[in-house]
Image (cartoon, rainbow, N blue to C red; front, side, top):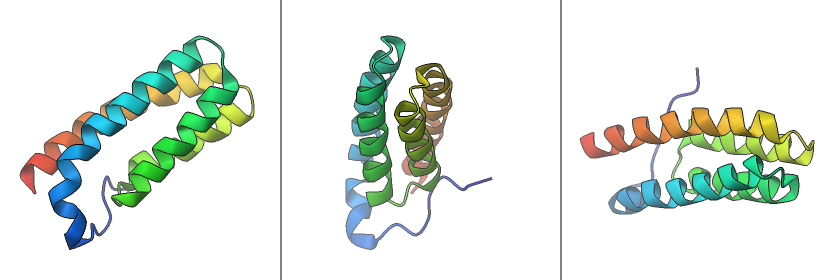
Amino acid sequence: ATPLFGEVRPALKPLLPELIPSLRNLHQKALDAAHAGKADSTQRLGHTIKGTAASFAALRAKELGLTIENAGKAGDTQRACDLLLELEVVIERMEREIAAF
């Protein structure tokens, strides 16, 4: 299984608490888009989730962002919804791990 985090650059560690609200916001927007069947928006938001997570070495969230992006690209918004439920759990786990840093 992919770990939650890779090696977080020291300069970014103070910014980690801002990652969770940002990912939650993107998650909600992507979920709304996927539920509405908006594949293009789902793809774009998956791409943004991937990039945001990658900036903080949030490996599992990055991986899910890519998979959500690909589901949107394929027009499979139901698959994106399933992946977004998984991302929600990952974000909760990340929040607990960040609190322990």
